[in-house]
Image 1 (cartoon, helix red, strand yellow):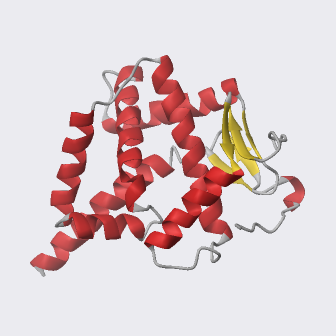
Image 2: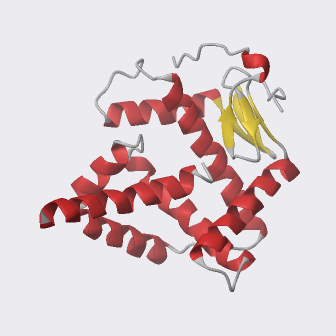
Length: 204
């Protein structure tokens, strides 16, 4: 019984970390060959394909077996990462390597070791090579939450950074290739195309 509670807590801790970034994770045309454009930064089709294939290889699945959900979720995360990084740069918010290492070490310990830690994140379509970036972006978001709501609670600070990133997304302009859907700045996610004129997604 005790072991079950510990395992449940470990899974919950890691799920919360992944969700905190994925939550942050108009159908205007992006530049040719781009999956998305965030301000002046371009996320290429190749970048997206490589990220998806990295997850599939880590899961020991064929690289041509990507689901639409995996592709869109990966693109969500890549766009959100760009937005958080750009907003952090504008506000001179940084994360040191020491802060990153210490945070990851705490989660590795809480999960019962690095293998369990990586497997839990991999089950959420996060490859081991993406872990540093995941936690770095999460720490940037946490620091900006404190910056924007210094006297608030973790919950209000989370709401503050979500609102700030959403506003920044509209300010700089965020567009997604229509083949993937339409960017929703209010929800910080890729939604379906207008009128549900969806195009099957293929990763090749």
